[in-house]
Length: 286
Image (cartoon, rainbow, N blue to C red; front, side, top):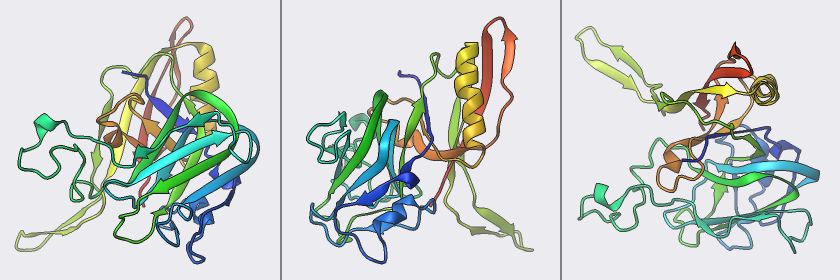
């Protein structure tokens, strides 16, 4: 299991976005709006229309790219590239073409008569209450100025591709992983009211994922440069992307999401050159 990553410092809002063909009323710049429901929508499903470039004006340090609240279909694909040159004649990172919805259910966990047994993907019903997320995470942070994102989904029944938010930032992968006891789960937002008769009535709302974990035995340098400074920079309002295990090929879509820190924690020094801190992050919803 690879160590968890907390990506931070979203630079999407600094970028100049261009390319493709996007609806005038739902333009590319909507990807720079933190309201995930305010989407950018392509004019068609042509590959030439469903792509865009981002120019950050200078070299920046990046590790994690995420596309949040997209509408790609079962077999929709994406490709993400980073470069130091505007024409992408050379790249510093290339995801290649990947499925937007990868296999997430081992064959042994599906009934044999399910139409999704062989591909291992979620059914549309199983994807309900999940904010769609594409993540391209690099093995290490690197410098780039330009980003290119391409979508391929010619059979999408909507007739267009759309997405609600672009995240691109650096990432912290602790030297020592989360300690055992880390927790991840769903936090219900549904309101329940009880009638005089005792009958329950529900105002159903999308649940949010929450993760709680602790880091132990950090060095003083790691604790100060990352844990301490990161909390100052992102506060409880800044966007982060949490990845439980960046090498996961089955459960990654369950355990990675756009989030914010719910609390800022005290960083404890329990012994010589030993530092520790708890973290809690809550998913950001559309």
